[in-house]
Image 1: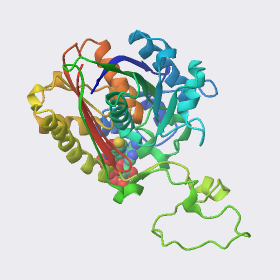
Image 2: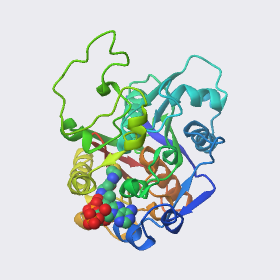
Image 3: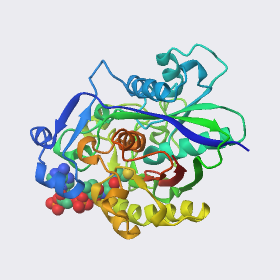
Image 4: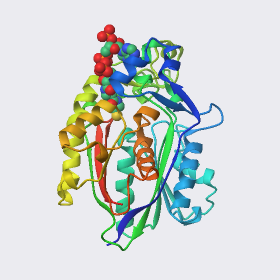
Length: 356
Ligand code: COA
């Protein structure tokens, strides 16, 4: 069986910096509140009409491909994780293929819908494909353009202040070196609380587009939730139904227990200890969550990498951006034990342990 290693990392952050003070000009919030609750000082927003989730991903991917010492034609599979795609369909995987100018069709492109843990899921899938011998060079990408879909009125402040745009990419490559690469990945899901952190409308929960064809049926969905309608309506626009909703404290409480649990699982699988970790890269959801996890695991400041202060929560992009930045800053060296961990909407969570 083959082993899969990270051969190259790339990231792209849009130039436009949006500070907490900038947000306080359009909604009732403050730099103090945001920093105290989340650690975020600023985030990046993509250029409207110029940049998309896919164009940002292409920039990060080009860097990762170059750093891996391969060409775009060597990529034999694309896995794209995002919750903010360019289109409802087709997914960003094929759009990225086109944007990169990969014309060969002996390539697969897969889209991952796992929000904050999307990159961990994508990495785990890439690892299995490499191990089975099916592919040699898999481009794994996380990219988000949250700024296109946030509520910039005070109504949306609890969610809007947290998120930012950006992209991160990795080339996952076949290696025969058993001492290097992905040692373990663990994935989890629990759909019980799917609506606690979700983007509900428009969607099929909303019923039928044309009620003249068929009477709406009561499927017994949770009546306390207004799921919106199947297509955009004025009512939905007025009520802000097409924005993300989040029960922040509920998410927070689960996140702080699931992060340490799943990190423990990958370590146990690889027969290693917390003290063996050279760098933990937690999904950048909230600095308080990361600090809690760090304390719980007894890790030092030099063993955990955070950059949420600069970029906010970039969901599927947060881990590859942070991973890339930590490497660029010389904080991850060859042979280091790196642990990546995420928790988010679904709920889904997971971790990956690798020898860099
Ligand atoms: N600016 C100012 N005040 C705000 C605000 C903002 N941006 N957002 C919410 N508030 C207000 C609320 O309206 C509330 O006011 P009230 O007490 O008068 O009702 C008060 O601040 C407290 O709100 P609450 O939601 O209880 O705050 P919190 O301490 O739970 O912090 C989060 C909110 C979202 C920062 C926090 O819950 C969190 O980070 N949760 C995890 C979220 C997460 O990780 N999401 C991504 C998952 S991957």
